[in-house]
Length: 123
Image (tube, rainbow, N blue to C red; front, top):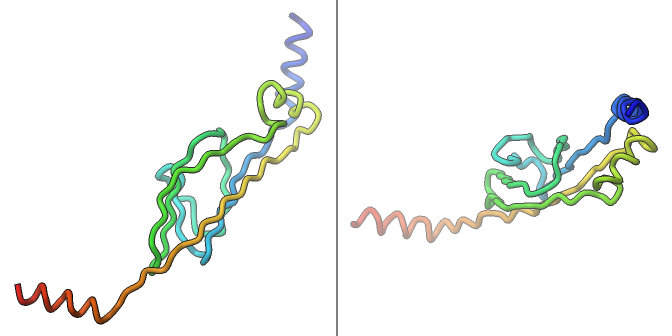
């Protein structure tokens, strides 16, 4: 019991794994929300604590918004119980995951827009 407590205290004092997601978009400058929390404009780097499912939304004026779900899978060294070994052997380990999105431009045809406006006006 005494050794277990010493090992636990030693592991907790060494450091922790840093986990980040880097999100890029083409074109850059899109506002990104992760699980309905705005995290910034692309390219953006944000910390995360848990692996699993994330809701992602990216918007940029003049482009169709992207609303999707992405899954974060841990690297092999960050899966329990291997993560305990990582904490001891490499306390400054960094899991940096990357997502990239391509935004499609909105196609506005001025002629069809005017025709729709005239149709509405005549109604």
